[in-house]
Image (cartoon, rainbow, N blue to C red; front, side, top):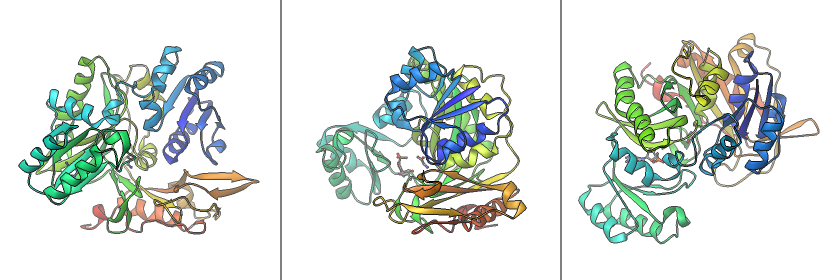
Length: 424
Ligand code: AMP
Ligand code: GLY
């Protein structure tokens, strides 16, 4: 089978890496891919989705997998499907679960899925009146996609009103903030859960925990994610069951009832408050770097998982998850996340330790190759992944791998998975 992966990050590389080891896959393509994905397959530099669909048809692509949210929100799935192609991901309509927080919150309310109490509005007076009913902290969110920056946790009513005013004026986030959500603050702990869905059936992958802040101890600015581990001990069977019954099943039923059955990855951002799961947000794609640690934990065919999801055939698929742990440590460029950095040559030492060869690897993201040399050219450059029988072992292997990687200005957190290890 030939597979095309849309995207260029570590997430897409890790899907490609898993598929490259799958006996069902003959050829891989990446659009556009990065400076290392062409060692797994072929990079394709077509940007226009209609042209890309023509390329897929002409090159006998059996399955296309979409990594990032932007092409999904832009309707790449609809374009491919209109040409009779098999593609994994939600339609543009269904991608509004991520693309519009107002759509998502109203959907959750309509189908009785637990989430923070809220109002949606484009009117400052209404926002202020609702803010007056809440006790601090309270949360103000821009409706549209803001690259993870459109959420303000305000410590007072005045701060919340100021944030609402900035957003509604279009000053902070342009059109994405012309309508807002104001909601109650949920005090608990966060989990990320990923369900691969075919419209009706779904398969849940191990729960992961991301580290969004730049610095150790969860300090510093938010980033796309500096590391992750899975499975996390913060979830047990009772919580899984609550999430399936109260969140995943009603969401899939609701999306069917809305005439937009949800196909693709449902990334559920959950806050657990006193043992009860509540939806913070939906994303319509895998998390990055969560994907990099989940792919190696899938023991059964990764191709089957995506293909059967894309062809509404998940119900009878058994997926096998390894009885292991994975930890991923992101290595980023000097000035991430503030600005782009000068290209820096990457040297990866030859791995001699047998254990490291077998139980650790690198998922490449912001890299370019020129004249046989590899350069760090993106914010998040690569992810060192370790797989072990315990979180500690996986973490140690991931960090051993970071010691093999050298480039000027490299930085990474030293405490990935600390929450899971602090009591151990
Ligand atoms: P979102 O993009 O909506 O997931 O928000 C980004 C982050 O803001 C989340 O991962 C949470 O850490 C935090 N957050 C969002 N909404 C709330 C809420 N209602 N209560 C507490 N924290 C929140
Ligand atoms: N790592 C979080 C995200 O991809 O949104």
